[in-house]
Length: 156
Image (cartoon, rainbow, N blue to C red):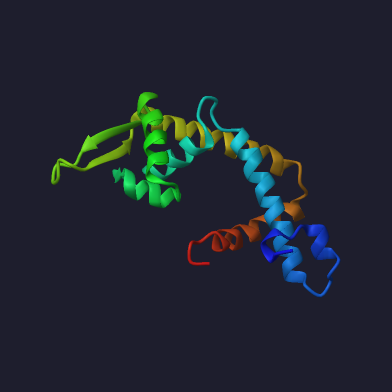
């Protein structure tokens, strides 16, 4: 079995590889939490659309090629996603004033409101879930946040 496909139970059978076990358990927990948070997103917006909208907000007015690269999808896929976002009024496509052959997309006011609502819903869900934990468990999570952020950096 490849190292990337290991499950937590497999890692437990080899107690000498604690890092591998931890990696497998962390992967599973993060994947499940991400799934739960995706389910709290706005109805009518796919995860791909929401991800692209978030990247457009982060990158500012961006070309579809750069957006496709940032999202790690093929340009035709990104073109379809942006078309759906544009049809729903979440983004605005504008011609680059420097080079009229280039189009850039930016988040519209409706898109910004959708991102804000989605983030609020997800944060509220996590706040409710955190209230069910002990103070000690919340302290552990507070200490883990910077470490999880470090693991998610692109140069890791």
